[in-house]
Image (cartoon, rainbow, N blue to C red; front, side, top):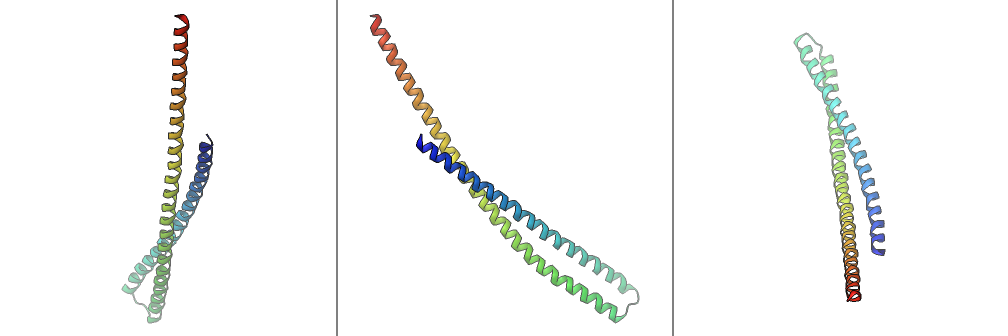
Length: 146
């Protein structure tokens, strides 16, 4: 019984670790989603600007306006490259947190299974002891009636 108590305490500890890992994973997933949506918005903006530039090129445009457009597109491209790096970092962090969550969940399940097996073993012992006691009582009754 004392071993079950200590295993129960360890199970509670593992459940807390799993909960903490789950919170960290959800936080990293939200961070990834935020950064990825920033990247999407920048890519969409760049696409719109490039379409606008193609339309403008069909009409008369000054060289200065073309330079401004190209500078803006270049600025967007640099921002996109920076955000892509942040997205990759966020993705790696999210994958690491997911791995930690999986490991914590597996550890918690191991302790649950150990406790379950010990409880089954304890029930078997109790049942065996009860059967032995019933056999002894039956033997005594049989002997006393003879």
